[in-house]
Amino acid sequence: MTIPGTDQLHAERYRVVASRDARFDGQFVTAVHSTGIYCRPSCPARTPRETGVTFYRTSAAAHLAGFRACKRCLPEATPAAPSGTCARTSPAARCASSSTASSSATASRGSPHGSATPNASSTAS
Ligand SMILES: [Zn+2]
View 1 (cartoon, protein in one colour):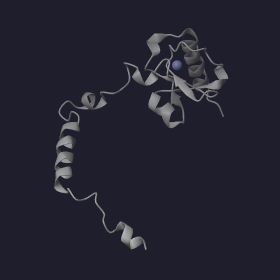
View 2: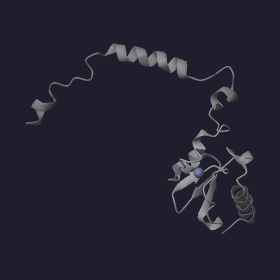
View 3: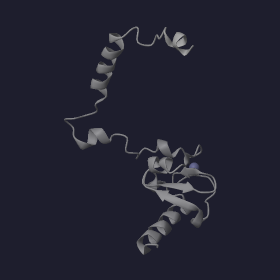
């Protein structure tokens, strides 16, 4: 079963990739089946066949599907990547990185002898 709308979107995105339109960088990535690598639309590499690619909304989605980031166009370094989502959703909440850093510092100081296990070798025999 193929949805006509999806095929049209695929064709439109393939045209963007074929023309290497940098305006679409960050809007989707191109995962190439034959190489197992995903690229941004403006990648200088040779454009693959239309039937041999899958388009993903984000580089993370392509990564989850088993593809690796292209080393030529570096799709994970796209400026439009949604890296600042926590700041955009609610200004009051901000990132929780500051509170997490203080709590981890307290935890590491609490147990200085936690890593040492002297009885591990004796119980094995
Ligand atoms: Zn690439």
